Length: 369
Ligand SMILES: NC(=O)c1ccc[n+]([C@@H]2O[C@H](COP(=O)([O-])OP(=O)(O)OC[C@H]3O[C@@H](n4cnc5c(N)ncnc54)[C@H](O)[C@@H]3O)[C@@H](O)[C@H]2O)c1
Image 1 (cartoon, rainbow, N blue to C red):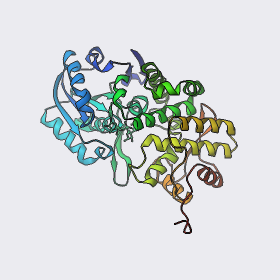
Image 2: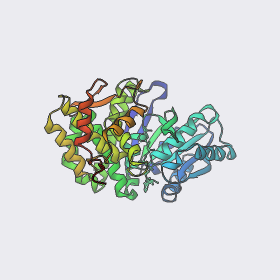
Image 3: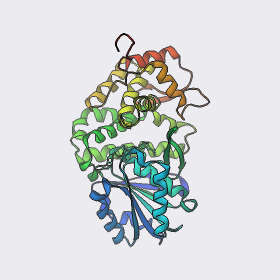
Image 4: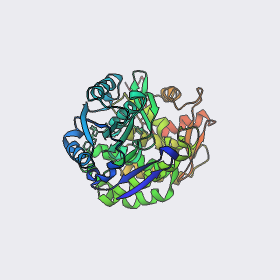
């Protein structure tokens, strides 16, 4: 078992990583404040893992008062589902000294985390992430949210968990497509922040795809270390934390433009990173060979290297609407080298257009329809 710490003063917390972590009661014990505990999970994950989590909580001395199960999928990140979570917490008389345990992927983590942020003005929550994406990214850093019809993650709060228990053993049951989507975020951490991680991935990708425990533990630990450093330096994303959005500006446009649900978040980020690397090359900042390394790795991971066939105007429109655009200007996370992401908002539109054209399927024209 390995532990990475997120150093945030009074709100510092550990991330425990390893196979079997889910069952280790000491990992929960120190976070119980005597109150009642609610497990929030979904209808896919709970049947596989919740009995084990509840048993470990019980051994740690917790009184698990309720289990709230939400529907599977992104649609659970809604106001209506949040109300159901509050109903469950209130019915079980979870108090200010209570604890919410979020058991599942990024959807459950974001939803349960937001519930914890506002329930009785804020109670503790502990993340038990069960997707690779959640273990390497979403369970760390304290961003919680639900979606609004007008945009993803539009209603949310910063609320750090008291701990993260990342059991890589749970990834054994993850669908293949979801595993690959999680690998996209690992590739992102490497290309944005850590050239060594990129070399490691180039040598060990097959082990990762085969779900080798050691390989999974390695990428979860390294990703958490990188994210923990960035979050400790800039918890509320006023500066360096934005570098973690490498591939996300284009990625969000891909997700929205293709229609939510058609592309997984990680798939959109993968093609978005290829676009951002193309942009970096066109802006004269990155060697074409380095962009080619990114594209090759994305391809080897079975992830898309091309965005959907949308007109470039549509991409720009969707990117300008993203909440990461500041005052209408689109900020791009681009690469100066492998592991060296920087933020720029002064790039030429013609370079952006060329990057989109280079990394997206051709839009349909009137003649080809
Ligand atoms: N808070 C953040 O910083 C942050 C960062 C990145 C993404 N996100 C959010 O995360 C969400 C995506 O998370 P995700 O990719 O984990 O999706 P998800 O939570 O929908 O999980 C993917 C699928 O895998 C299933 N599943 C989960 N664990 C499983 C397991 N061990 N075995 C079998 N099936 C399992 C889920 O039920 C679901 O069907 C998005 O809503 C995104 O906005 C948040």
